[in-house]
Amino acid sequence: MLEHLFGSQTRLKVLKVFFRDPARAFFVRELTRALDVQINAIRRELSLLVKSGLVIECDTPGNINTEKAGASLRKYYKLNPDSILYPEIHALLLKGQILGEKKFAKELAEKAGDISLLLLTGKFTREHNVATDLLLVGTAKEKTITNMIATYEKEFGFQIRYTIMTEVEFEDRRHVMDKFLYSLFDGEHIIVKNTLLDNA
Picture 1 (cartoon, rainbow, N blue to C red):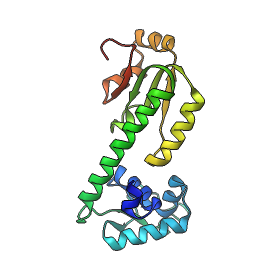
Picture 2: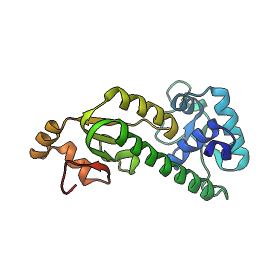
Picture 3: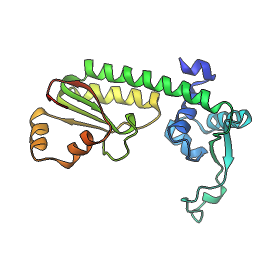
Picture 4: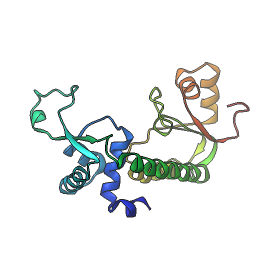
């Protein structure tokens, strides 16, 4: 697994967060909250990544209100795109993410219930203009889905927004040209399973 290549699970989690939004700067407690990892572990990994040249300390981002208590004292970190490690690490993480997402989609299709339509979008396709990442249509095993998503959220390093509909609700919304559904099919999406639509 990738954590063996990168030396630790925490380092892998931190790198996944950075490479998911390469231009963004993060502060320590933000990473601690997002990854549910102790602050000392985050600081240790950031220190190692800075020494490697892959991550650099940077100024407070322009969209941050520095008048808020403590905001001006935060140390921010971001990826260094000029690092010789950048392209190789990026390629490894991308390959690992693709494999992980395929495994997630396969497991959902097999275990989520009697699902007639399973669609991935949002964070899975880098589509920013939709309100969900996952659409499941059919008779769903909601507890199974919730548990599965919680597990994969930890692996992927991001929150998965999901929507469950019955076939009746889906057809009703489809026939009235529902804006939510239209946005999913109009944007970048991947249909993992489909026994509901002839031409999706």
